[in-house]
Image 1 (cartoon, one colour):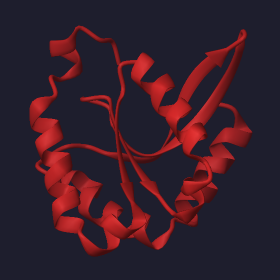
Image 2 (cartoon, rainbow, N blue to C red; image 1 turned 60 degrees about the vertical axis):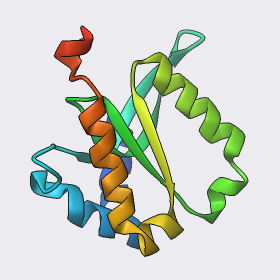
Image 3 (tube, rainbow, N blue to C red; image 1 turned 90 degrees about the vertical axis):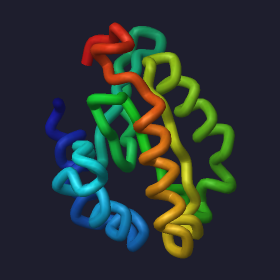
Length: 131
């Protein structure tokens, strides 16, 4: 991992949004049914022979599940988010997107959706996918 990327990840972790902090409190230390999540996880993709990264809000590597929290700025970036989701799906990564409003006002339902999704997903080993 390059130094600028590592520095960016550290900055994002230090400057989480309120909703990221609230969700992280529910996910960290395997609090959600024993599943390990990583926050601000870099997803690598190659485009025209150039490696690039974008950063997922939360990532569960065992199931290749990304959780994204979208604030108001994402309304103007829908095409960008759709492209990111497509790239991740192409890499066998499942993406769940929630709005900040859902995280703030409906955390239990959001967590329930994540749990239900994890129950449905086969692990990497079961899918025959390498980590």
